[in-house]
Length: 170
Image (cartoon, rainbow, N blue to C red; front, side, top):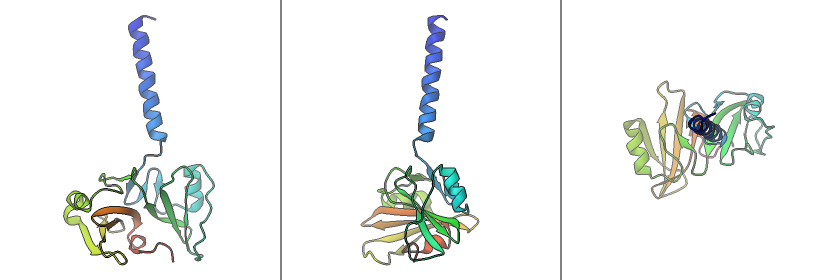
């Protein structure tokens, strides 16, 4: 092999490795209907198979609603209602919505990005907070951001009904 071809092959291998690493690094984008390969409506078994790990219920006191956490995705929680994924909760920076919003962003930035699609309401427990809610075009799903003092502190996406729960599973 000549030097030029060797360099080209090496560059290709490095680029391929970088793409593979980025795809498996856990950086997923949250959509109204899921995150990464996870889809709202999956069964717990389908979720476990998709994440390649056995997921166990976190104690919630409810038979019909509970959360599971994947070891491979520290800052994501999956709400399971009646045996299916109904909501995905995010509690730290680094995981963005499909519109590019993440925990730590300003409320003003989220309002600019989503515009008139966003409904802003007072937070139920935080005097200096709001709920910023955006519904999908078909109305079946949505994303809701919680804020405090103008900053996004968490967000969740899923069925429109489940993103209305201000305390998660009760």
